[in-house]
Length: 386
Image 1 (cartoon, rainbow, N blue to C red):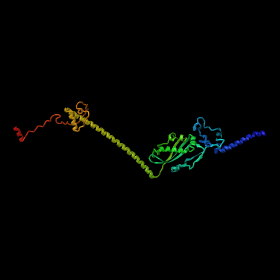
Image 2 (cartoon, rainbow, N blue to C red; image 1 turned 135 degrees about the horizontal axis):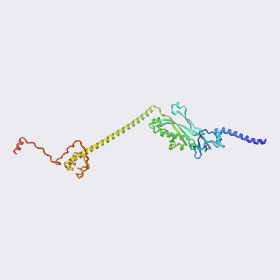
Image 3 (cartoon, rainbow, N blue to C red; image 1 turned 30 degrees about the horizontal axis):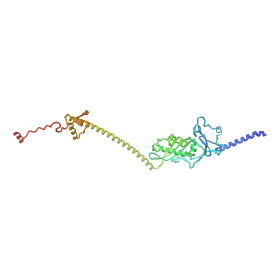
Image 4 (tube, one colour; image 1 turned 120 degrees about the horizontal axis):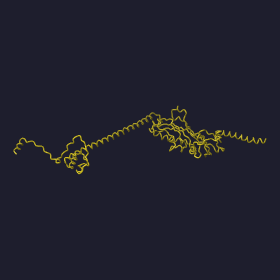
């Protein structure tokens, strides 16, 4: 009998232990006592006090790299769960609970209403909790809606914007310990700053035609770098809808009038530039015409000079004549050089006859006095007596 009891007692003890273990595991797991449940696509953190110990990641195709402290894609089955977990669905926390336990943190939950299509006002289409909620898991893929009121556009219009962003966790350590779990504040601030920077340079028409698209890749570098500052990767960022901030018709009328005046100013500026271009072209044409007239006058002067030269006039006398009659002087011509050098005179075809050059007294030949008429009357008699 004693021999049988010696074999039965250990088996009974083991059975009791397994029963107690199973009860504790399944009863305590929902409360993170010794064991825990980790839903698909979530991450839990084991801490000692407030000190990080390890992450429990249940994300298909991804695992937590302890060396880099980043969520990375699996290359050789690193995301495979332990045998016990695959059989029971339980993840081990620690035998020394509550010294080691699952980390919890507070978040402010924001969600879009499912019946928002029936709601008119854009600010009523989103639910924002009044108080934070304490949670024990971190979603790997985060769907975060946002509401921005009174966003200024380039044409002075103010709009309310309802949008949503899809993000994946890249650095859970930064999220939970670098930012003490208050990462949504940083996320919302960066996203809002990015949207304001994009929309302040477009007008209402551009927003309506979706001329400016939000690019998640622009949230990975520079001042809007979510990866290093928050620990998230932006997968998608869209504007669900928008509305003009103030529905007062007078204000909207003023905005439209301002836009119309701006457009008129642009058109006036275009017309002014066209008129300026026309005046410049006209001025250039007049300058060219004047230049051609000047060349023609120069050719005429040269022709007149040649006529005087043929009359064997002294060059200094010719110059005096030009000055006296206010005729254009030509530098480098025959009379300026005193007749000692000549510059080529261009051949000029003149269709009309040149005016006869004036012949001052004493320069060409003595003028022949007209013949006096025969004396008549007494004068003729006197002449005859002589």
